[in-house]
Image 1 (spheres, rainbow, N blue to C red):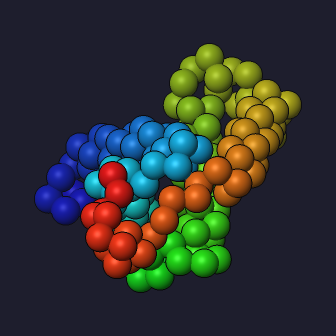
Image 2 (image 1 turned 180 degrees about the horizontal axis):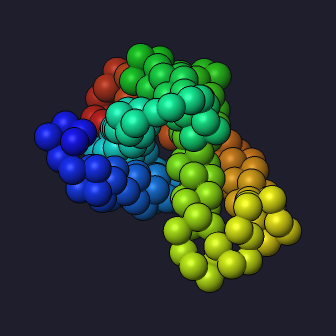
Length: 175
């Protein structure tokens, strides 16, 4: 039992949160490319990504695994993204720091999705049963290159003014 749920029910709960984080993160990433802040969806993405990490730590743990390390890195990345977004309000360098850390948090989620897909989906497991085979490595490389490309464009294109500057100018909060 984990938080009053069977391990299976908790796993389903964790997977649903993870998928919501990935889908909302993809929309937020598109917003970064189109200079849209998407305030509510961004909060949802950051929150569900944090919840994904936290719930991941609640599974029975016998030793430190790569998943635990990714979870720790993701939470540290989220802390920086949240600070840049909500404390610094995207002012100055915090704009690109936010973009990079938000996309890095999304990358960690997608990285784990690929790992879990190769573990749980029979056709993928057959291609890479130990996850050291070429199909797994190629899939992870494609994901990494896609995120590097996405991040490069997002840093260049996300030029939206911080909410603080907009309030001072009387323009209201961007959506």
